[in-house]
Image (tube, rainbow, N blue to C red; front, side, top):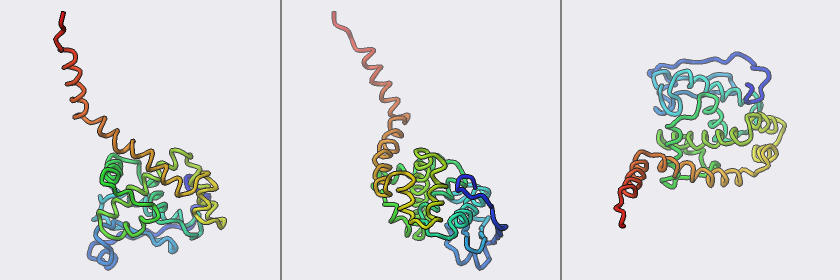
Length: 222
């Protein structure tokens, strides 16, 4: 609530635990562990599908889906991009992990730097593309909070609630357009995600040790 700028929690949220033989489970893709019906204060969870990326525990899944409902409440249903909503839910549900880092690294190494505005269909296509979309959305929100501070999220959502479009709200709060922010994100993270894991790997370390050893034992001519 503090992160989102929500002062009143609102009405109770109904949490439905659906078994795999339920209509809800049979109607939902297998890679979906839960979903929120935000305008009805309901979240439907499939406990048998946990852990499943991006949530590794049932508690994280609950926090993730409740996060969606709280975002809806603070904006009163005003439009928020799916990638930002999912990135926020991921941020609310749990800390950033090595697996998230690896998924973003793979996106950079494989050249799959999908624009945030083009991520929407990725959440629906398959388990693989959904995981890709969650990782990128989560990385951008993590970066936003790190650079602008946690109050930036509440300020953006408050501006959206007041009638601004998401793009207008983002620009007003951060001083950057979404396009510029995204380009800046990729430029900074190209080095961070692509080269630091390589430079910090054990293989690189042993190569450096070997080079130093060769230099140290090089014969000296007199």
